[in-house]
Amino acid sequence: MADVHRLPTPVVENWDWQRQGSCRGANSAVFFHPDSERGSARLAREAHAKRICHECPVLRQCREHALSVQEPYGIWGGMGENERRALISDQRRRTRTRIGA
Ligand code: SF4
Image (cartoon, rainbow, N blue to C red; front, side, top):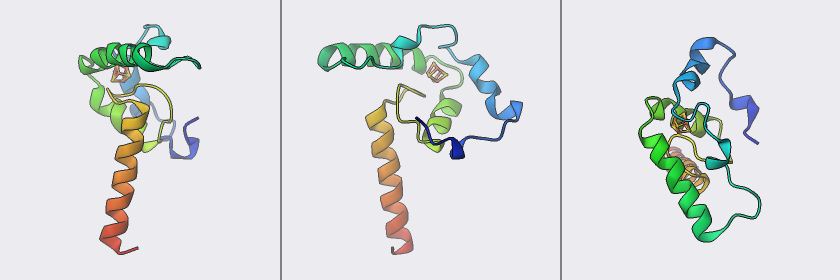
């Protein structure tokens, strides 16, 4: 589950982008893996989801949201779970280096 403390305030402007997503009304199973999914089935499902994302008019907002709340599951903004984790980890490492921690 995402860290809800990182969620934007409940102001319509912070959430309205979700109404424009290309995934709106789509089967959420394309974006979130079932428990037992592995290997090529997972890669194929994720590739399908990312194709939808890359045509989406709110990809940037979706990706920023998923990164800011550190969304742990699913494809958001054309990025998968491992890609988000790697990017967040890299950002933390660079911040620590910059402040000398
Ligand atoms: S970027 Fe992908 S997950 Fe995000 S709103 Fe668009 S289609 Fe949905």
